[in-house]
Image: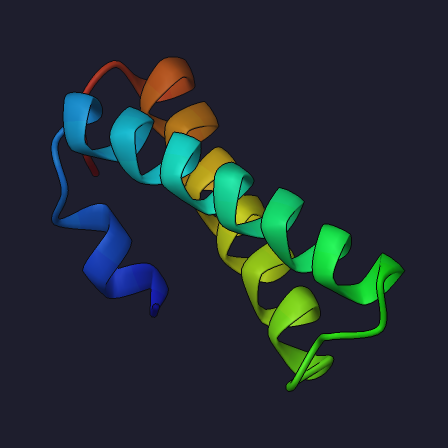
Length: 67
């Protein structure tokens, strides 16, 4: 997911997406622990998406509106 796509989402959608990605990360880590993970690069991609969402949320928090 690109940062430009994330910036188009509303605050509620960002929160929902963040919860969804954290759940996916948990499941991926669990799969990795039991050696059933197909694509280990997916973990880093999900972590980067979480960081992008948190960055956009912080930007909105600091500036009040989407800039």
